[in-house]
Length: 436
Image (cartoon, rainbow, N blue to C red; front, side, top):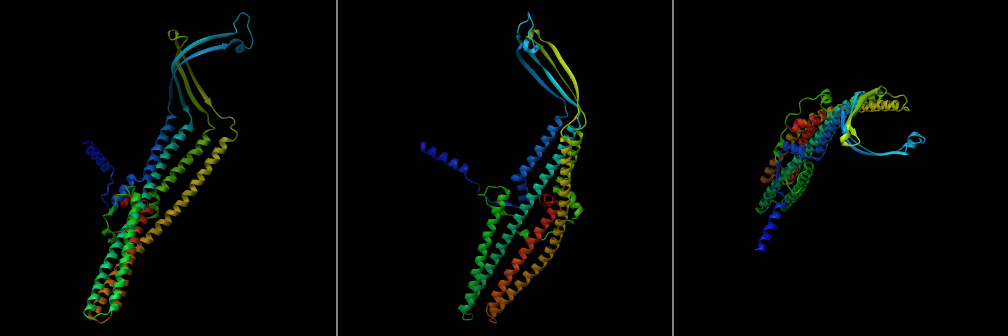
């Protein structure tokens, strides 16, 4: 009975630890949504926004009144001679020990301090910068997933085309063998067909390996269990040519790219930091005080209080304020230079992507026509070989042309799909196009 329970327990534990090997079928949109949900870089960027929000709350708290409770029990013994500076006849050398009990509230509030207000405004722009950074990470994550998914679809199309060519090579080999058995064909024709069949089989093996490794890369980007296989649900969509991204302009890309919005937020922060450095020359006004119950014992405690107002203004800071303002000016110039460089980069990316989309679209049309012509060539060469008009050299040549045409078609379709993704990324619309 004990052994049965032990076996049952071990079976349950093993079943609980077993890996889920159910294939994960994903469309391109599903893959993007999964990446945005659990990609580590996206999660880190989202946490960065939360950190900026808490920094804003900390900066805001400096503008609000501060109150602190205090309860103390003090034992004090004072050297009277040391306190006065001389001994007094008839007075003891020391006073105490004295037990003092106190409990109350300390208050402090800033009435006028522009530096605190500037820091609060800078923290608000810090949130904008963090949000723009999060969007940048999301856009980059979507681009990586889309590119990897498109690469996997290309590998799947290669496998499909290679399998089709293997089937054709097998049929042509069977045809050559039948003609040889019937005394019409020759052994060299059968040998050529067999060599072509082995070549196509080898290409199929390479294509399948490429598909597996591409799916492994997609699994890594999606941060899914590596033991769980991934299946592409959009394989057939690879041969479709959807309309390109709506016409994009450089000006529109300037408003959409999160990297530029992040730099603009940093520029506003730098301007505020420069103003903050100058505001340190202005006086700062604060009020404060405390109220407490104080006495030699709790029974003898009476209310005591203190209220104060103060004005602080710098007289000499050793050049600190001037240096801080100069530093803020340099940082502002640095951000402006980065902004100009990024604008030039965005303009180049948009123009390049538009040109690539247009060129790849024409490539797809030419490649599709090439596949049609190559198939007609194979059919005609096969018919001529069957009729005994020619040997199968023409058939083998036509098979090679068909393989080349298939490769060109798949490469053109991949370039077109990737060009659409690059244009969406250049315009800052990756998530809008592929995740919604």
